[in-house]
Length: 96
Image 1 (cartoon, rainbow, N blue to C red):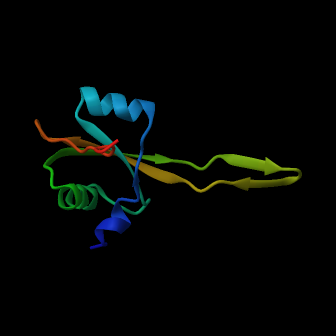
Image 2 (spheres, rainbow, N blue to C red):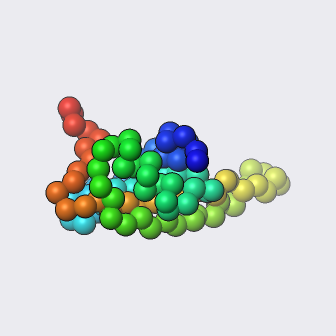
């Protein structure tokens, strides 16, 4: 099993993510492409001391970028939608 900080790379703080956190009790995380749902669930439960009910993942392809004649590709990444149990919360901006 991977270390906890290798599974959860960073939280995704977006407009859609904050709406999901308020309405649906969900949190978005950026995770490595090789992480599976069981690893994501256990990492979130251990790091933030919450109960996870469901994990959904999406794979994003990297965008094609061009600089002059050189065509390249940005790396792909994976996003995880983590649904928390009723009454559980993760606050990223607690003291702000």
